[in-house]
Image (cartoon, rainbow, N blue to C red; front, side, top):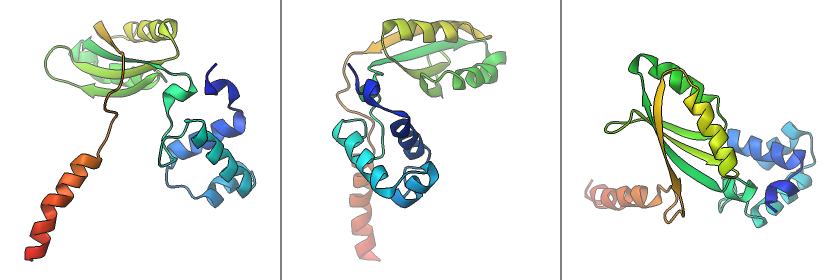
Length: 167
């Protein structure tokens, strides 16, 4: 049983509000959802303890809500249809990212699913898009390093520090 089974409409509204505006204040959140401030705070604490909200409290852990299958899909596209393909991919909720790439294939997507049947359904949607020639799908077995920016920005900060002292 996933946490998704324990999320009620208020929890889902809170998650959507946080995704749309990660910097929203508790007061604004409670007002926009029509719930008490204490309710908003206690719900957010519960979502954090359940692992739905990642450390920092504003990013949703999709695995915790049932999307534990991650796939990387490379798509070969008829170049005249590229814009239409991207527009169609935008309409598939399980498609998290779309990048135009060089090399083998034309477009790369990160797709999530609740199980392999759900993934297959999403891939069939992709294959039905006008302009898609073929796809290649690779499943992620484990995430060793999740998306991160701190080491990069930390390195820039370290490099900038000596220059700041010279000024």
